[in-house]
Length: 154
Image 1 (cartoon, rainbow, N blue to C red):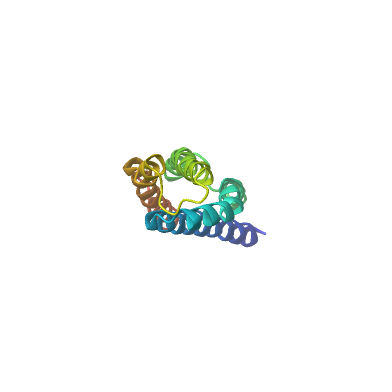
Image 2: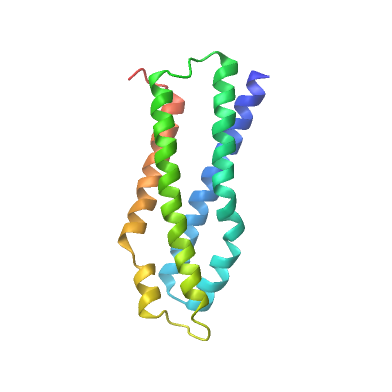
């Protein structure tokens, strides 16, 4: 049972990372092209994937806690506490990134017949803050993986 729960935890978490990072990378690439009809279609099509990200991470986190408990790991060991803090940080950053995608979708939907983004949409597409959040999220995922693989005693 322990191996099955650990496997499910890892499967769900890898799926969450793939969906979140893959969607974010793809949406940013589409947005950088600046072609409004493409942005409109792709961002609307991405909604179900974006909506699945938080539940996937939530389920993965729950399965991770269950796996740790079943394995007899102390749930307050320092590397796990760091992972809990990173989970909260990643959730907050994810909401910020999702907010960017929602703003792009809303503004693009208002630009019917335009092929080139308006100044307002262009400003949102070019937001450096949102791009920085994405790259910070990438670093957080790398730290998560390191914590799970090496389980440092810190």
